[in-house]
Length: 284
Image 1 (tube, rainbow, N blue to C red):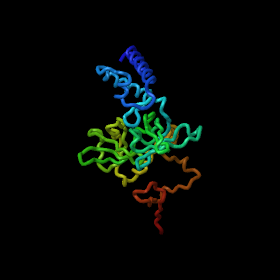
Image 2 (image 1 turned 90 degrees about the vertical axis):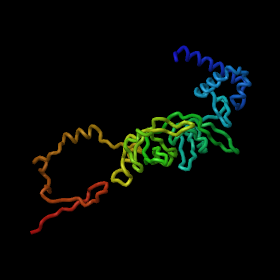
Image 3 (image 1 turned 180 degrees about the vertical axis):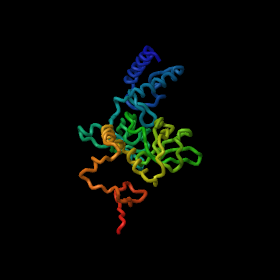
Image 4 (image 1 turned 90 degrees about the horizontal axis):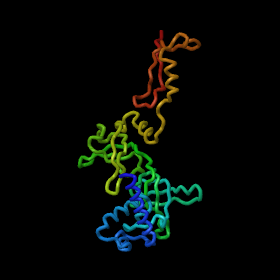
């Protein structure tokens, strides 16, 4: 689409928005909107497309009952979404820092395609006198990489259940993108397609970490889940290389040399570190 065409479409959208502003004071269905604006039958397909464009622009909001309302008539807040493992969530509004506004409860059915940790826009409604929210837009995704357990369902479809119970939607893994993972193994998965109204997230396994009971796998999971730094800095690596691996006579000066003694570690095979040892010495 050329710049000229985009500008023309934007102008038509602005004109339609002005007409809608002059006629709408409450939520309406698209059929009611077409009747109010007297849209000819032959133009209704184009009209629906422009309504979708106005929604994408954030000028119109799709609200309860498949109805549309001007965004300026709706109470909207931006904030951070926290999902409870039981399926509902809360949005902590950005305004909380400034004005002390409270977290907004969001029922599971109103989470839409948002996931734990996302920055979202929430529409605030009053339900039986209490403020409740409905996610209307995802502003920023929290994580495009997750760790979890790889499974295969009865139909042969693969998916990853996140290690974080607050990520309640499994990530589908198409055949050919499993990275050789076997059911029951812990893996890292990159989300390539975000959830839509009709399907969940789709991803590709980028790393197979192994079985949860394997030594060190739990540590690798924690590092990836919380994005902890786990590599030495270039400066530290350079310093280690400078010191070198060989011990010279100069290094031994001022030290007691125990190398002739037989010393063995006594930690188990699955220990996280090997810092306990005994020395054997032949007595006369």
